[in-house]
Length: 95
Figure (cartoon, rainbow, N blue to C red):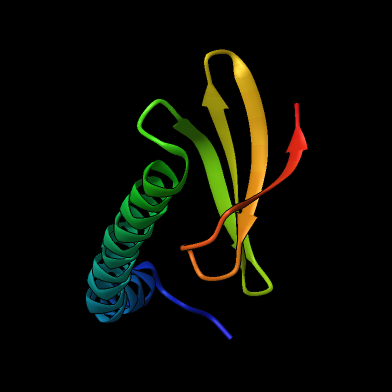
């Protein structure tokens, strides 16, 4: 089987042309997820401030198995808190 340079270039251009719409769709999908993450981030921050008060800052947060976990700080004291519904937060540990 012999392939010429011209056939290789034609195949490469065709493959790139077919992949371009998929790459644009993937970029749109990824940027859409950052919007969702920003909304979740905003809800978690607002919920913690409502539960603990305005002096608390959220260092990080994550969600796993239906629970939301957050590391918060207040005047140098750090806490790990958890919630199942983003309304009632419980202090799990003090760091």
